Length: 150
Image (cartoon, rainbow, N blue to C red; front, side, top):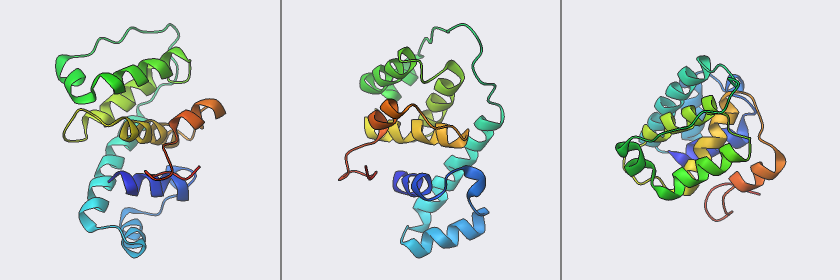
């Protein structure tokens, strides 16, 4: 699924630049993605689109996020630390943090792989039509042998 998300991020500059699901499914199949992987990614993207619709931007004061035990188990210590890093750097406001956590929790299994979380954060920015600060963008790109191309 993450390979499909990376492909969409690299191919379409915004979600509204993507074709409808049927046409996108055909394009992704033609590129070589498996149907199950495509369906998972599109379903996940539907959840991201719903979260983006309710996004209200920065809401003033910083909030303190208390993680539920199941969130801590699912995300893992490294991913929670990375989310905290992005927040403290001022690039991931509370509402975007919540979108990232929501979408990470929608991924089965756990603890969350840090490289997968980075893709989720990129997709949150992408879904809102925003681009992270250049230094943070470098931090979000994973190694070339993993998924994204520098």
